[in-house]
Figure (cartoon, rainbow, N blue to C red):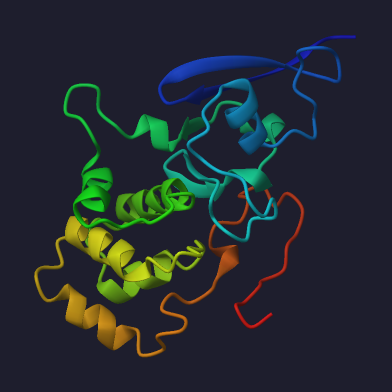
Length: 204
């Protein structure tokens, strides 16, 4: 039987995997998240819900944010993947988005932070200068149980160049203090429609 292989580029480095159920092979059911974390030891992206609802495992695939727990590795042949580890420039240092999160203390426990940064990176690649409202909508697929939403939004607005008045704009857009970011877990579904998952809300 002819062996099947998948080749993908992760953070600028090419990897080739044999697909199958044998020792050392990648099973057809293995997700991109599992491959990144267990085989490549890129543990920056996290796994929490395993159903595409929390956004912790968000990475870039060909420049678009995807929840890697919802994408099978076998479907990533020829794809260009960037994880949180791949954002930093070896010569220039942290990506401006990463630096903004540090400057604005936009995290608490930090578990969700890599996924949030990658989701924000996806948004800014698509729209370099989103409004505060567009940022809020764009981040709707990421949960933060530490409730660091305001500092997260402040950091992203800083990179987006929304000026000194963006905090007031955000507060006007967040009249519902209990749910400052609209819950849209389907924001980054698998581009290959792998499986299905239903939307959840904080009221469930």
